[in-house]
Length: 111
Length: 109
Image 1 (spheres, chains in turn green, cyan):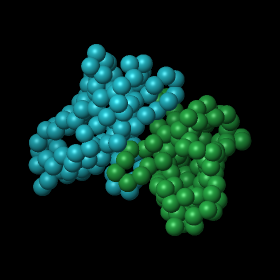
Image 2 (image 1 turned 135 degrees about the vertical axis):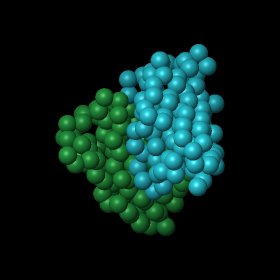
Image 3 (image 1 turned 30 degrees about the vertical axis):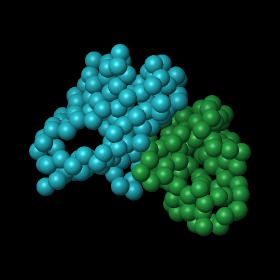
């Protein structure tokens, strides 16, 4: 079956703009995670969904970041008023029995 | 103290050699442990879970030491294709997943 997909694969935006990053998890996986990875670092936890609800959003860096998963499947990570420091690869993973299955990521560049 | 700590490396190891890395974790309530592999510009993929009794998968052996709060990964007879970043992953509570920064491994021909 299909794996986790993320769109777009690359996003270049200007400082101050709004962006949306989409994640389509593996069908049937109820748990979905968002991470941010900068060069030379491991994935940094942002938020975790169990079904439609955010079970843990303690990793979101500030209130410019928000994520939704309205129907318990596709999730969207939304970043308002982007800053250059937001530039990173944003990874999504869905989880089954403790194994995380990652998407290819969205590379966000804020100019 | 960081929640999950790893030596970033790089470890430069000749092909055929044995290499081992450790990872320490700070939260004694951590319940599950994993090693993930990440190739350059690719997403992480599960290499193996780490059980209390230790586990082996071919050339790879993982061990957990709860008393000292560390896990280890041993790679025997290393191959060029083992070159990657190895991420230590700890699950705290029911669902919080924490990644280490990774250890870079270069296998030299």
